[in-house]
Image (cartoon, rainbow, N blue to C red):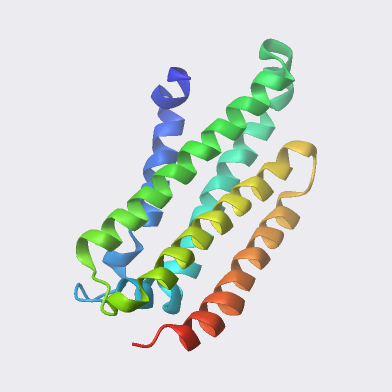
Length: 173
């Protein structure tokens, strides 16, 4: 477990996951509504989510190249466990960094609509987690391009199907 946290390569990927979560700093204003930035702006959800998916996929593909040698040395269960744990740690860093920056710099303007905000934040966490699970399909000899397109489709459907249509009707600015 501690080797996963101390590895130089993993530290670089953890740092990249944290940077992907700092999308609010790159989106411009520092006086914003959290819900409008998180779910109605394309950069904060869709672009940073796709950047996170791409970072995770690069990490997985790099480990797949040395998979056969590692499986002989440590076993397949341990290899898959390390893969899942690394992606889970990257997922936690991404979500914590994104929501920490959001809640430190932003505000919720409509306090009466806090319920929809919490539900949407939880759904975003679930979607990013589902994307992380989809990325793990690379471990089972599925093409990385197909995995990326599938996770992009899930992220795209969530952003445009749920966030832009449902939240824009419910959450009044």
